[in-house]
Image 1 (cartoon, rainbow, N blue to C red):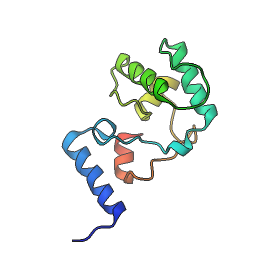
Image 2: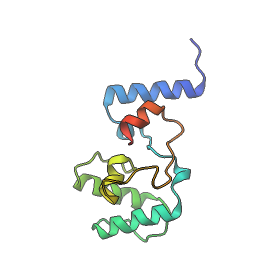
Image 3: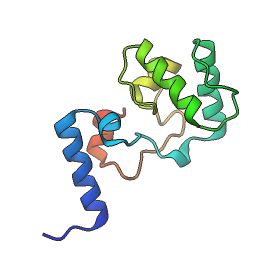
Length: 122
């Protein structure tokens, strides 16, 4: 059977999730499209991490390694899966139970099948 690139990628992601149970840590993908991480939203994440005691460096609106490391430390402290990437559980831990991707204008990662996004990212 011959598969196109997106079908092969979706199959691979689904296989990784099914076998490992962890989308981001095992497949190395984030829930949200990096293009939907607006600078003002990233700044809000950075400021919230700083207030919680996890320094991402200056609140400059750029998602970089220090922000990812601060988020991973925050995730560890909150006993969440440590992914260094935003997911639904991390959004709620940062901004409250009513926080949703839609509320912050975050778009799904286009490489994730919808059923995996619904299961792992909401």
